[in-house]
Length: 117
Image (cartoon, rainbow, N blue to C red; front, top):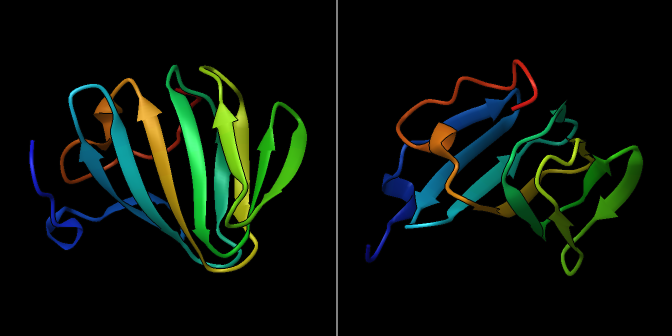
C-alpha cells in the first residue's frame, strides 16, 4: 500500500459511456468513475456493500425499484445484493467504495455486466 497515481492505473470500461479506475486496498475497492451524460448503468446486484459518492454532476440511481437523484452532497449506501441500475443525467464524476474487494475490477479489463453478480 502507499501512494497511488490514478492516471497511472488502467482505465476500465464499466459499461458504454462509463469508465473507471480502481484502487484496491486490503479489504476495500475505491472506484473513480466518469460517466457521460445519458450513459446507462445496467441493472445488477453483487455481494459487496457499496457507497456511491457523486462528486460532479447528477446520477439517477434506481435501487430495489425506487429511483433517487444523486448530486454532490447526497450519498447512497447500498446493502449487499441490492438490485440497482442507473443513468447519468449529466456528465458525472463518482467515487464508489466497495467492501469487500471487487476482484472483477482488479487488473486491466472488466468483463461487463452480463448477469447479476
